[in-house]
Image (cartoon, rainbow, N blue to C red; front, top):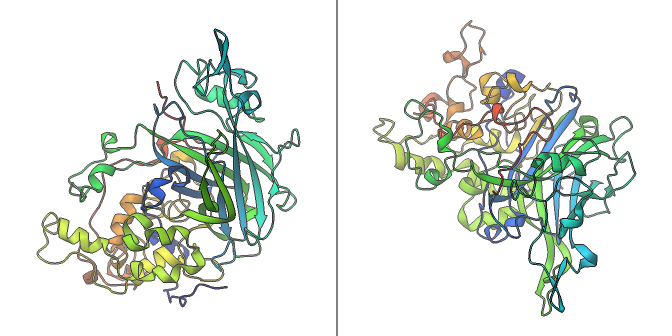
Length: 525
């Protein structure tokens, strides 16, 4: 079944041109819709999909879905376990029909110690269960006797319709086991005297923080992979408070330099679901471009239990219903209108035609005109006037031909990655991605260090209407009048070449150079 809207016509571009201009993703996505704000365990904050740049992993793709936004590291005593009644999924479309061809499913369980009775202490004549999740220090995988809650999970792979069959569960190749341990959150230095990541490594089969796994449904030679699930430091940098205070700053780099102090998320954590999968397992019979997104779902019927237990405070029944969806972040926050935010979260990419007006006639540029017309020295409207915004349709819904467009074009909102483009080493990455000449970065997928906020602010205000820094007309000068894409004209976007920014730094130096790339979470104490 194809998308319900017609296929948009886009300009055929060269590989270099398309790579430089696609502005697919925008920024992080925290509590972006009214209903999902009430269900933080199901709230996806960021989705990354990129060619692995760890040395020696050139044939692999990394998929990262972050959940549970704005975690205060000191948020005890229950901290941030995943929902055992939900399923969390990462979907891959490799033929362009905007439907999942491969789904990786995470299924969690949270069990109390001591046969689900929990730890208890003898207090006088009474045996009394303790109130805390841990009652001693953690440092090795074999001292779980002090951990009152054991969080475990399975990782499965489904080919085709995600609800058509049961997952084939990934296994640990060293033991054949399919059950994995989710590390306890980083509650503080006294709980983890040998260091938090040393504790995490002690649980795995690899000697690192991740597990080595095997996906038997992948083709022969492409079955080996990695999985990490656990708390990490918030991976996105943004001046969050000022942005949603009617963008309470002038967003121009000429007056606003990058400053770590502007990152309101610097002391926050998130929960990461990360996979590294061989690209031959993901591409199928398509053209080597894949689209990806993450979702979280729960069963359709919920009943508050009259006799709640630790495992079952709520009774669920019925089929699974999707409540959260994320690929290109900030789409639901500032592109989709308030009446449709919850609808967008439960929808599927193949049905994104119903939201097309939000892309072809976006409201954000009009709001920025109201806020910043005077600040940028303009005497009239600074919002792009090329309506419908075919430049944004290309960026958000179709990808660019020859670069990150799948073999069939079904307009749909997802991150797209050309797996044939080699990864760029960490110390060589450019945080503006392909716009800065780094073809392995955003919007050819999205890496943690790509500064998608700055790129997206410029794209939404019409950067694609101006000549680009590529010598399209072979004049010998990149960026001259002959280097316009033809999607729109410079006069359509009066500030399309302005250096918009939020002033919060985002670059590869903030991350590791090995899977899962995101760094040790902030300690609670």
